[in-house]
Image (cartoon, rainbow, N blue to C red; front, side):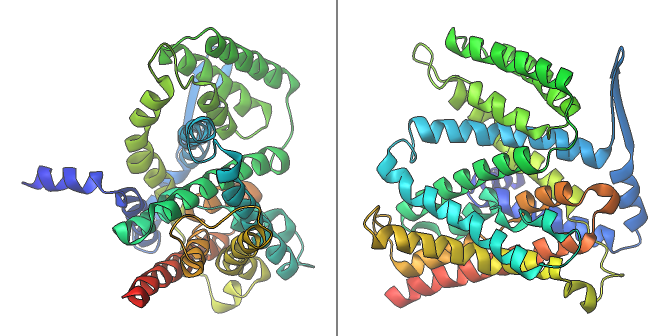
Length: 386
């Protein structure tokens, strides 16, 4: 009976978001309990892998952020390719509204953050933190509303979030890359060419892609570019169709439970544990924290709503079928759930040696309020309809 109930739970559309939330809550509890030192010790535990002269040595938390999250970004690459080739982004007319809304949803919080933090030394590097949307959480909240939200609205949010993730990938590559190693980049380039050859020759077996992808990941890691970008490259290299079979869909289906119930929850557990004992009201009123929190709650919804209104007003696209402006407002609020993606960018903007825990708290608070507000607005629409 218990196994049957567990099976039903993991089949729920909102299950992934619930597990991620539980993992983050557990991290918060541990970080603020007598087990706090043990939690910190676990994250700082040194882990090394060595093959000959090749050595990769990192604390456990960076193995999670650089390694496990590469698997998540590989799934993002798979989803992006599928949506562009066959899904909601395959037709320019369908892609226009979520694409422009996603751009507005990134520009709005970035501009608001930079305005609030103007004059604060070192704050500018965090401008991208409130620009991200957590797909799992945002869709999880929509799933809680069930069939009461039109399918077209869910498709709009999914497309917007995928484009948002693509923007995050570009931002990471362009703005959060440290010192570059040309040798490692050259090796990574050879790996990318090899992946392209596999794709063009119609190789449907996944093992060669994964083996070469691992080499690309190591090379990108050593190059100075963030290693998670290797995951995107591998995802985009997987063929959609080969002789009537779809390696992409097969891999996407296989990855989904691991990403939803292992990768993202482990990341949340490793990054959401903020010790609150030393954080006071003065810390939360710091411009960086205010910029992140308001960027997620206000910047995201305003950026998405204003650009959506402009696109519809000037006849470039129409609202999703069956949707109204109240529902679009609720969806715009849900895009402010940055959580895992915002926490991830936060680790890049403010690296571990100077990573301010207040930044993580601002992400958690901004995401929580955005999620609750979006849920209540969407529920209010249903009650209004009667």
